Amino acid sequence: MKVVLTGSKPTGTPHLGNYLGMIRPALELAERDEVLCFIADYHALTTLTRGEKVRDLTYQAAATWIALGLDPKKMTLYRQSDVPEVCELAWILACSTSKGLLNRAHAYKAAVAANRLRGRDADTAVNAGLYYYPVLMAADILLPAADLVPVGLDQRQHVEFARDIAGHFNSVYGPILTIPEPLIDERVATVPGIDGRKMSKSYDNVIPLLAPPEQLRKSVMGIVTDSRTSDQPKDPDTDVIFQIYRQIAPDEAVERMQTGLRRGGMGYARTKEDLFTVLVERFAGARKRYRELLPDRPELDRLLLEGAKRVRARAVPVLARVREAVIGEP
Ligand code: TRP
Image (tube, rainbow, N blue to C red):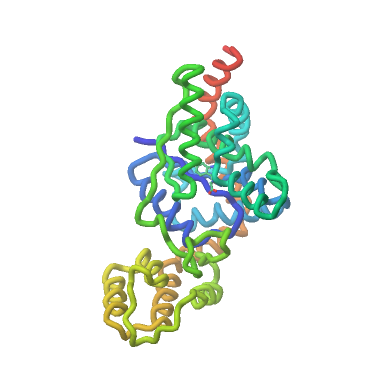
């Protein structure tokens, strides 16, 4: 059985892209592998400075996972900050990681490029946490000795960094860390958001998943379309509504929409309505469970702490070997 690790940063309300890109694949993998899911609240500190907000979003993420079917008996759900060994390992790893590697991180490079474009100093408003982010992420992955890390394309480099960091550590200290592999789900690499770009909270183009139906309707109706009329044929491969619909609707319904678009006679009002309906129906049970769970923070804490206990049982021996290697502790 492989150990699969999946994490998300609590910086926004969970959306359909999170479900398709991360939650659904993790639930599927849990049928045969050991799956660890965590909420990376320490990573969120590179952008969020209000503790209350971090906490609210962390509970939203936890309630979302459980509402969508994570069974805490079969899978391990935990909060990063409940596993202090992560930070300890991150520092140790930082000391055998070359600074040049971190200079090449996409997120850091993008921040520098944006500053240059505005004629500012390269590191203006770049906190050291943003720079160090890939090291903390490597520690998340290496501490419980994960074999597989399912991620979207945007996170691939981070997993590759974790491999490099582990490989270098092992070359200095011996074969202690497990080298992880990224797992990219090709089906969902490109779920578009309501403006046609990749669905992402940083583009503010997401479809909220477990929000009340009125809010969901607003978001679906806001999908940007062109001015073609209902009669005009449309290409399903480039149609944003269809690209989202095909991820969640039953096969026959997907085929029906696909044929209708190609043939003509299927307008955007109709396809939006179909998408809205399938979103409401498919997640009705999850929406209800979410509403019940979210206010029950003691229960969510209980589940998260239980998960942290389990992952720490895996982590403590790994960290002990690492400490022994780097500072000679028996
Ligand atoms: N960087 C990831 C994101 O932005 C979150 C994350 C942190 C993560 N640590 C991880 C993902 C470890 C997978 C494994 O979504």
